[in-house]
Image (cartoon, rainbow, N blue to C red; front, side, top):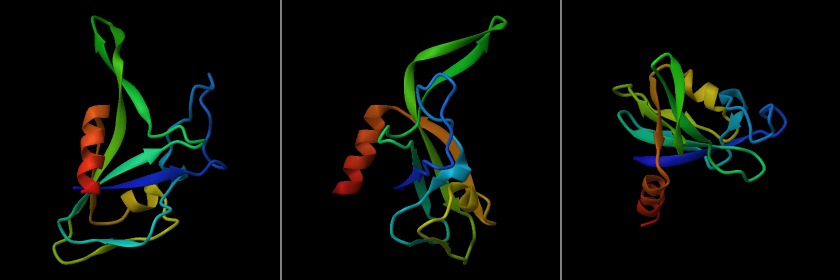
Amino acid sequence: MLYVNFNSNPVTIKRKGDNTGYIYNPTALVYAGENFVIMPGEKYMIIPHQPDNMGPWRQARSMFLNNRFIQSNEAKTLIIAVENRWLHKTITVTKGITLEELLDQWGIGHELSYVSDRDLEKIEAEEED
């Protein structure tokens, strides 16, 4: 699975109320790389990045247990797995497309997930080989 970075548009993204980061918003995430084609059945991993060189979105998972929310101490990186589910049609990702526009296209399947820092390092190292 290949990975692609989507960067935040600093004009349209909003800061959190406590100024510890930014609010995740797929309409404010823009692809800035070279155009590429997602072939039928091909999968990509999208890593959304915050503005101001704050890196990928990191979130601590929370769960509801015994009538209260409990938050994990370990923050993980948000990723989106994208798949072209068309049998014969390609999907072109162009410079300037927002994450929302990509995910709204017919034939695109996506799944939100989280990876640890160690897993992210492995993925990036594998892509460089």
